[in-house]
Image (cartoon, rainbow, N blue to C red; front, side):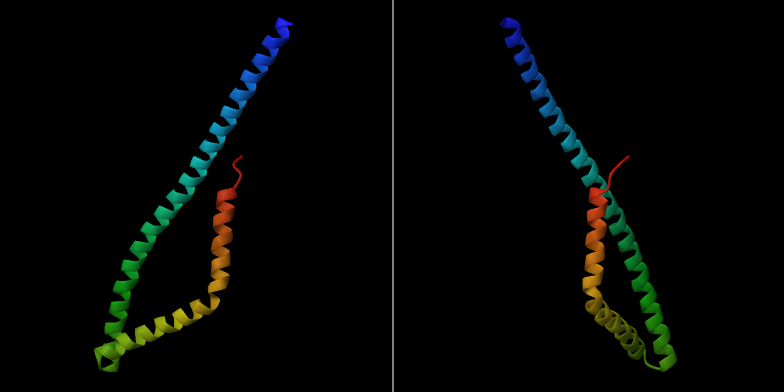
Amino acid sequence: METNVNSIETLLIRVEDFGKTAIEIAKLKFVDKSSDVVSKLITRLILLVILSFFVIILNIGIALWLGEIIGKNYFGFLAVASFYGLVLIIFAIMQPIFKRRIKNSIISQILKKDI
């Protein structure tokens, strides 16, 4: 009878250890996935900041160049601003498409299986 009690106690200890191990594995998988997502987000934000500086300086140059061609600097800036206004309208119309693609990309990145 005592061997049965010892066997049950051993089984319960192993089940408890298994549960703790499973929880620890889930935590580690979560940390791995979240760190992967956050690291990609940070690197993309850094690239976005650098790209933003480039685009701003380029647009100032284009606006000044167009203003010189047209004859008034503010006409060059108005032309560049009009271009971005048009891009904004197109983006606003297509926003649901972009939103869906970004959402699907994030979900697939989080649920990606590692081999």
